[in-house]
Image (cartoon, rainbow, N blue to C red; front, side, top):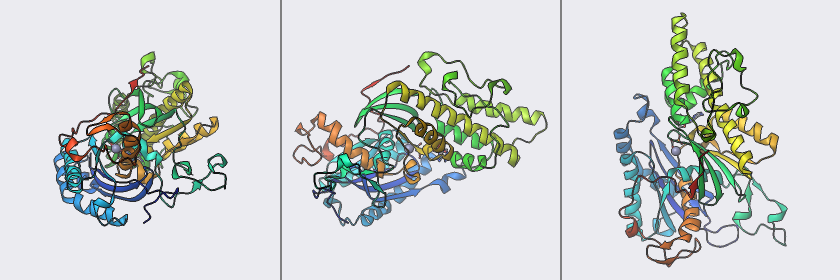
Length: 431
Ligand code: KG4
Ligand code: ZN
């Protein structure tokens, strides 16, 4: 595997480790964008019988799996020894403490033994950067403006891989995962302002809980999506929480026909916030009402119709608010990320809306939507290049470029690494 980038200079290669929840993952990423290897050992089968992630089981399984996963990731990238790399990155939060500690401790050990710098990464920042990744098989789109005088592409940053995000800012990011639902204005690399977040359940959590109510299985997102395929989204009407009328999409059923309020009044400050716990309760109430009327709510066709109505309600809210924020802040591109960004209806609805208004939309390929370590390697590269570069190093002078060696933070600096990091924000703009 080549360790130079398209410009011929040595690539900056990071070994990234991710163990924040129920996936044990390791990857090698070059220059923050090119995936050299990406291994994920999923624990889904282990947790299925509990209907959700069992934290103690998760951390023990990470301990059992991590060494093989890291060795495989190194071998796939043709790396014989960690010392050949430039840095080690690890997710240090948010997530399950016992799970995070497995990855963090291994990363500290590897950094200590190899002398490589250790870059702690916020899991949500990882999801954001999943949009900047590509593999060697991703198609390249080269714009004329990015070609040099000879017509050749001069460096990897100028090679715009179709499907991956560009250097156009501000960008609007919708993070939709099992634990988070956030709208973030990204003003530049590693510069975020929080526009809104969920007040209660995350979107993925709502998918998981509704799937449990309908006994569709775990994880709930893919199960709801599969059931919804044979469902009629118009048979039942569910609320679109915290949406104002102007945020409604065309596909939304007529509010008059609904036994439940389709649009709830929303105060100005909740314009970009989300709430999914009431939607889950609406599903529960609908199921109870159907049972009272003698309809078995979990009967396959009825469950499919409820799943389709629920999925449509979540997608309407997510796309409506993202569209509204994109217009308000005049962003140059929109990125969707996190496990729920794998949802087919969400991807199609967002693509339809943003294609219509001519705004570039990026969703990661499906294998990068759910938890993985490649996204941690990408975020680490940009954090080191842009955020750490602005701060004085714990070892001395300021960092400047990713290839500067002298002022690297070492593993020693991170021995007391916290596992409860939240997304580092410049500021938050709550409406
Ligand atoms: O990002 P992720 O892998 O882990 C967290 O950081 O939480 O997201 C997991 C979440 C789960 O709630 C899962 O049900 C949801 O993503 N998910 C989906 C789909 N695939 C995964 N939700 C809706 N549709 C999907 N196809
Ligand atoms: Zn995640």
